Image 1 (cartoon, rainbow, N blue to C red):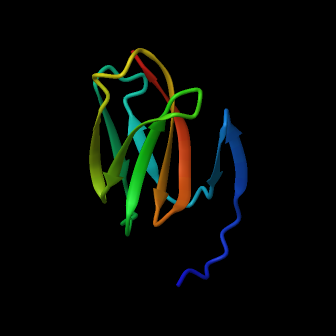
Image 2: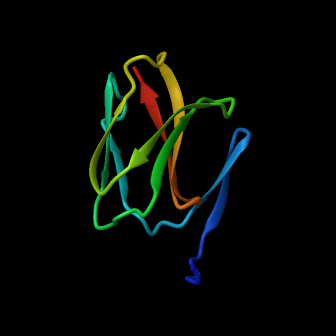
Length: 102
């Protein structure tokens, strides 16, 4: 049962929206990325964490489970360009951002 009230703001990127609570630390790097994007979750243990990468049209390009600590996303096969990501835990959108693929 989730009863915590978390102040948030709504951000719309293209055809997709995401709430950014600012409460959960996600650190994707390097940015820009050539092949492997490292997403570090510090001080937070997700129950059912996932990260989704989508293009400028909102199409989901890849999704991957997130765990506490370091998570590696293989972006080698993606075309160069700007991508958007959002992280969620148990269906709650926690954080979002942009990443450039070289």
